[in-house]
Amino acid sequence: MPRLALYALAICALTVAAAVVSFIQGNWLGIVWVLLAGLSSNMAWYYVRKAKAERAARAATATG
Image (cartoon, rainbow, N blue to C red; front, side, top):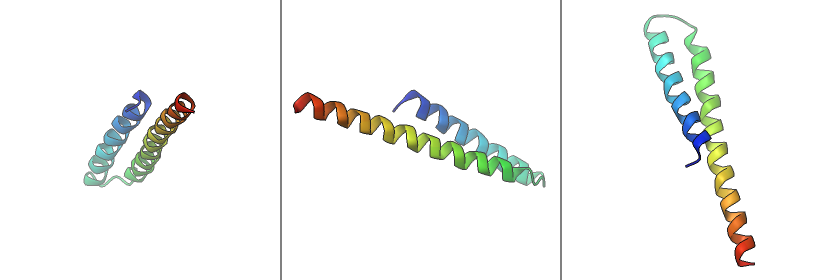
């Protein structure tokens, strides 16, 4: 897994934890944490799919 995807997943986990703590404390700022968790999750998927596409392109040029 690419390093940037791992960083994005770590950020996603931290923001989910921050959202849970924020909502437990009754703070509506947790909505911002939920939005950041969604953004970081999408970034992780993007980097994983990008790496997979690059690998497939390299394999196609090596064989073709």
